[in-house]
Amino acid sequence: MSKTSQSHFGLRQLAEQVQKKEISVASLVTRRLGKASQSESVFISLNHDIVGQAQAIDKLIDQAIQSGKPLSPLSGLPITLKDLFDVRGEITLAGSRVLKNIAKPAAQDCAVIAPLRNAGLLFLGRTNMSEFAFSGMGLNPHYGNPQSIWDRATGRLSGGSSSGSAVSVAEGIVAASMGSDTAGSCRIPAAFNGIVGVKPSYGRYSLAGVYPLSPTSDAPGPLAADLDSCFILDQVITGAYSGAGALPEAQRLERSNLSLLVPESVVLEDLDDRVKASFERALGWLEQAGAAIKHRPMPVIDRCIDMFFKRSIVGYEAWQHHQSLIQHYGDEYDPFVRQRLENSRQVTEREQQSRYREKAGLQRDFNRVMQQQQGDGLIYPTVACVPPTMAEAMAPPKMNGSAKINLRCLRNTAAANYFNGCSISLPCHRPGDAPVGLMVSLSHNQDDYLYRVAATVEKILNDRRVSRGCLPSNPVSALRY
Image (cartoon, rainbow, N blue to C red):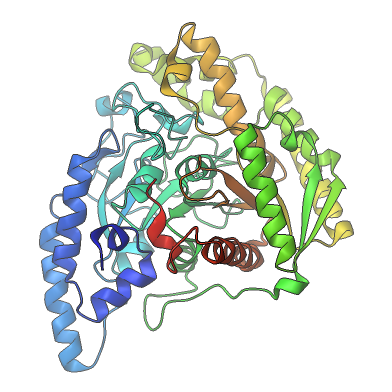
């Protein structure tokens, strides 16, 4: 087995290797820590104690084999965490310099992270991110700019705000990571790096101990080499899987019963040629596999995007949290993030309450449309463009140019946050091509069914690549460009 393919395994394959004693946890973790140390701008901090933790787990595994009482199959597998999750004994900076002035080590793991630790997973490091999670590009002037795995010679945006989380997976450092998604921050970097990213329904995961951007919109979510790994993390976090026994697996639908809706909407406009080509090819593969693809007018999607552009829910909440910090430490903020925050300083509480009502109406209208159309999922490109170049994003006038690129990155993903749904980005491009995501979305609290739909779509796409000689039989192993 090559090191390259080994480095891109999902959680299930790594667990099998460890259980079969094909690799020790210590050697796995040591190799991944080495890769992490050589990465550029992917991490804010690394957990160098992880090697000792891995050695201790290897001893426990040996004891468990002798006693016939196996440990959790996830024991000792490393993952990474976006730098906004409280981890006991560690400082949460949310990608900022500002919080160095006031942050203290967390007394306990946040509610999302605690069950992952209890299931045996190890935390390799805290990943870089857009400062305070307030950008879809992934740039960070304090800790460097992670680059997309694609076209490193040019240097392209990794996507944000969960930039380091996505790149840590795409580089083969870990099989999975935890990020967060307020308007696309898991799905954009997933699309830009050829991996899977999930925005769960709001409220599916607790926000206790997660540094806030928008408390009514924030949604922690997994990113991984494959959907299976995302599902495993989801089941651990929700408590559906305790870590004991066989790993859970999302059940697929019958392909011939799969009905997918493509909205005739702004989300299909102004697409890069490579995005359009990859998406249309993916639609063809799905139809050839027996899925019904239905193109339908869905004005509610355009209304969601219009609200995101013109009457943001996030801005007011973010300003309420940051205005005092800006008064004391404004010069230490990323200027782009500070400007975005201050753009909402004039929004009144009365106006914000009106926006909450409007968003609730969008959710009701979207749910009604989905019930009328009777589709298994809504699909369209995750992002309208392939990863823009660093030069484009940082060219003068930086603030104006960055704002346009940022909004283009966020346009398609933000809709799901405004109809308050759940959404998953799957890679749909051919290996070697520019990374393109296909997004599957459903209504609020339909996450379990969404995983089934997305698992079916992912299998069809990967089968087509295998049949055309595009991918090896283990598609998880072909992520590097």
